[in-house]
Image 1 (tube, helix red, strand yellow):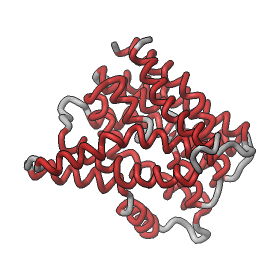
Image 2 (cartoon, one colour; image 1 turned 60 degrees about the vertical axis):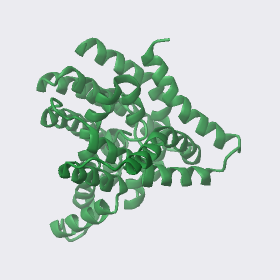
Image 3 (cartoon, one colour; image 1 turned 45 degrees about the vertical axis):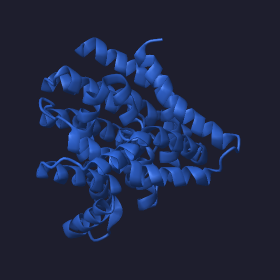
Image 4 (cartoon, rainbow, N blue to C red; image 1 turned 180 degrees about the vertical axis):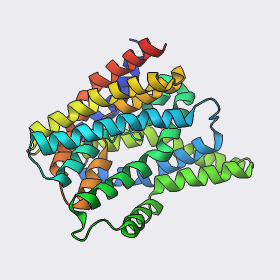
Length: 315
């Protein structure tokens, strides 16, 4: 078995174990909520903190990397929005949800284990550059577009948008973990021995725990209606977005490792954040839930496919 196939099966195997634990009733879905809260609130922020403190970002071409990834986001978001409004006749707010669901990759719960297993620590470091701007950018775009497409009857209010964005941002534990790591890195001080042990203990369980919790969460979300739109959005997420990332990586001349990480990140299915954004704005929850479940199931094959293509193209 090749390392690539083994990594894909390992990552999705942990997700499947969580799903089966919920399906059989061995664990209640409430357990998944608790595990997710711990993973997102504690373990993953500590992992991001450690990455920001210890990573070597030299030669990662952050501007070209960001341009590559978010070009793919913009292309796929636009396609998702148009598919929902023009093909399925939904309103513009549902179109925003469609755009989010089609372009919001699960770069944390799935991304970290994938990059670590396939590309090693260098891949994780490059992915961290995407993660550092991913959530703020996607959240800001969602807020602005919801404001434009009917969020307020009296027009778009820039101050309200900024306040809403900052309120959501400063409460996000992942952003706190990134900023804390950057600040500690700027001090140039090494972490004390005890702090290193504590950080390593929490960071090392982040990936497996998050994947298992994600599987339990998928059991809770399930599929309920909106299957055809969800299938279309899943197709855009799993095929259009990585194809756009591959083309953009070639256009911007990314180094091989950065290009492969960008394509791999774009090929990941949507995570729970697309559902949470839909919930926050009160529209499209079932659509986002269905798309997340369908895309995650199909990504077992499609992510391996795009990793193979990226390896062939960029070496």
